[in-house]
Length: 160
Image 1 (cartoon, helix red, strand yellow):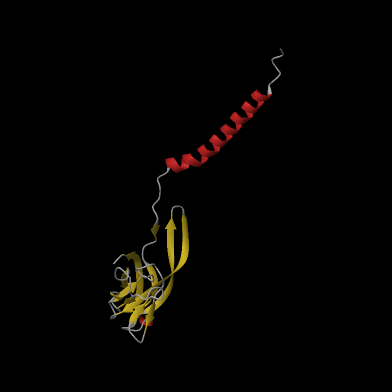
Image 2 (cartoon, one colour):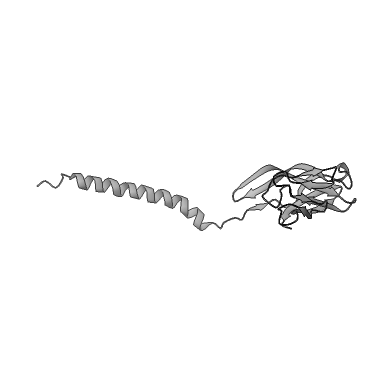
């Protein structure tokens, strides 16, 4: 027999081994940076300016839309976020997360009853964020808040 003649089985074995080598090399190229470099934790960029303190009415919550910068691993992105902000005085401000603590629906301020009302399952919250009625299991979640030079700065959301 001539040794240069390759059988069909030998040819397919060589092709399969070659493809396995290519796949292994591709996975190695992706896995090595992941294994060698430490994982970055998902964080936000700290305090975010939400609005001017002077723009808010005192004693009545106002829904504020603001831009929040988020860092996620190797990417930084800007996203729209909202908060219900209550100005109690020129130095005391409370900011609530816009999601109901029952199932995460967006609630609204009901001026006639002076309560926050969730339209999904009729949970009601006082102006202080406490549960008045409905299936909500806990008070409204709050943002960390700072007032700096007339600007309201929001931090992370803290579970109530």
